[in-house]
Length: 168
Image (cartoon, rainbow, N blue to C red; front, side, top):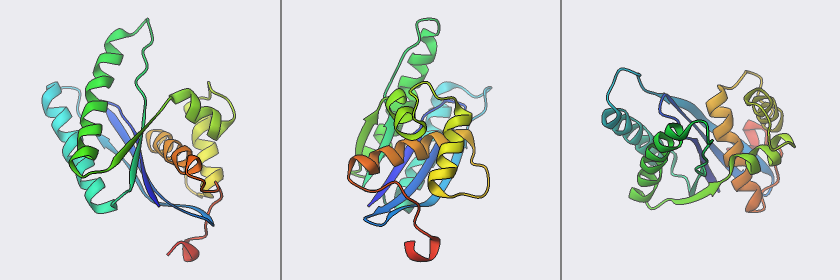
């Protein structure tokens, strides 16, 4: 089973494609879709949508795991912008008939790092450890991988890394 995790953000949208089986998980691809601050919102959303559409088409995931919308009272504009980005993420998945799992940020952090208030650095370390990755992972891609790991775990896939040779 392939799950694409997506950490939506207007400046940086992280993604991670994981392959899961009864033996465990394997990272197939990860990256970050970046947009420039000086570009109007509609153009940035179009850029995220197009890039993510390509990732979905190439990776052929069975499901997409995305952070559920949350709002901090001190930053209401952030929730509105995130709603826009999350909308184009869901649209890109729907256009290719990919199911969407919405996961709360706290649930993903709790499942991966053992603490619902885990920092980005703690998520990075946990993802590297679970997937046995040697190199550091971009924080946005690590958050996306954490979402994909939780979605796979909820489908009964054990969260242990599969060696590259065995994953093929």
